[in-house]
Length: 206
Ligand SMILES: C[C@@]1(CC(=O)O)c2cc3[nH]c(cc4nc(cc5[nH]c(cc(n2)[C@H]1CCC(=O)O)[C@@](C)(CC(=O)O)[C@@H]5CCC(=O)O)C(CC(=O)O)=C4CCC(=O)O)c(CCC(=O)O)c3CC(=O)O
Ligand SMILES: NC(=O)C1=CN([C@@H]2O[C@H](COP(=O)(O)OP(=O)(O)OC[C@H]3O[C@@H](n4cnc5c(N)ncnc54)[C@H](O)[C@@H]3O)[C@@H](O)[C@H]2O)C=CC1
Image (cartoon, helix red, strand yellow):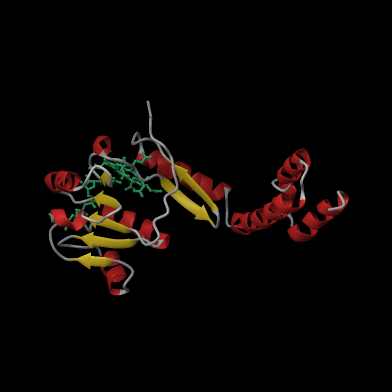
């Protein structure tokens, strides 16, 4: 049974330590870039991409082997070296309250990274609980087709329209009706969402 609990973490300003600088480390680091996390990569070698990110000041790369005190004030920790013993050393260096993921040991990890993508405020994540990362990746690709770029603007519209409904409508059932109406395919496809929304509000004299 999969007992894991899905959450969206706010990492802004938090320290995230990645041990290892290979392709797995790179994939995890790239997906951390827009979170505002302070990413420290500790690894004797790094991919070209990681080196470039370090040069641009987007991450810090310390070119050396992992040492236990690297994780002392980290919020999230990725053990992503190709050395099982080093990865276990990272696990042992962390305290119980720190969140650790070990690239080659899902059972001993506090969290897994799901396949994911964003369309503005919409975030879609897919987890197979370690059964098949490739299936997770494939489902993510299918979802990317279904929820294409148009969703970014649509979500902004929904956000603003919802705020207005919450402010202006007192009656709970009308509120629900309007909140449901704005997610209809007509609004998704409309070229004049704001006008259509205003017309809808006018119908109810709002
Ligand atoms: C448990 C988990 C822990 C974690 O890393 O968080 C984990 C573990 C392992 N992955 C392994 C292999 C591969 N992982 C990928 C790809 C991804 N792996 C990701 C997540 C996760 N991988 C977590 C579970 C997620 C879930 O199942 O829901 C994704 C979704 C997210 C990301 O990494 O950002 C990203 C796709 C991103 C995307 O496309 O969207 C590929 C495909 C490729 O590289 O193209 C392969 C090769 C094919 C294969 O082996 O299946 C191995 C064996 C290593 C070895 O052989 O030594 C282990 C260890 C083990 O299973 O023991
Ligand atoms: N969780 C996942 O998504 C996946 C996990 N894996 C597993 O992840 C691990 C890493 O895979 P890759 O990135 O492909 O390997 P890689 O060989 O490309 O990179 C390994 C990195 O670890 C670094 N390293 C080695 N010893 C170190 C030490 N003592 N301290 C700090 N860094 C050290 C190396 O310099 C190198 O940068 C493997 O154990 C593999 O089994 C592989 C594929 C996917």
